[in-house]
Image 1 (cartoon, rainbow, N blue to C red):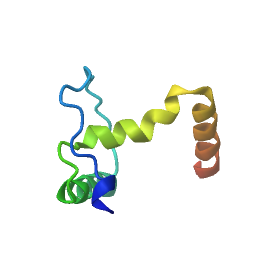
Image 2: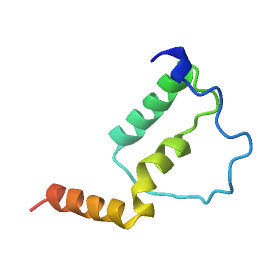
Image 3: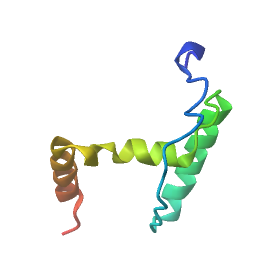
Image 4: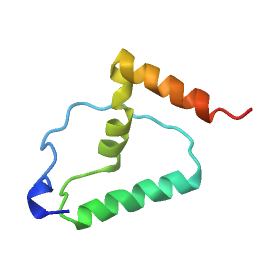
Length: 79
C-alpha cells in the first residue's frame, strides 16, 4: 500500500462505544487480530479491532445494506 494512502491516525477521541460480546470461530478472531497487526505495522497508527468490526457492520445502517446482508445470509445458510 502506498504511504500516501495510509491514514496517519484514527480519531483521537473516538465516539462513545458499547461493548459487544459475541462468540466466533477461533479462526475469525485470529485473522482479525493478524489483519489489524498487519495494518498497524504498515503505519495505521491507532487502528484497533473495533474499527474493523464497525466498518464490516456499516451495512446494517441502511435498508439497502440490510437487504444485501439478508441475501448473503440466505445464500450461505446451511440446508
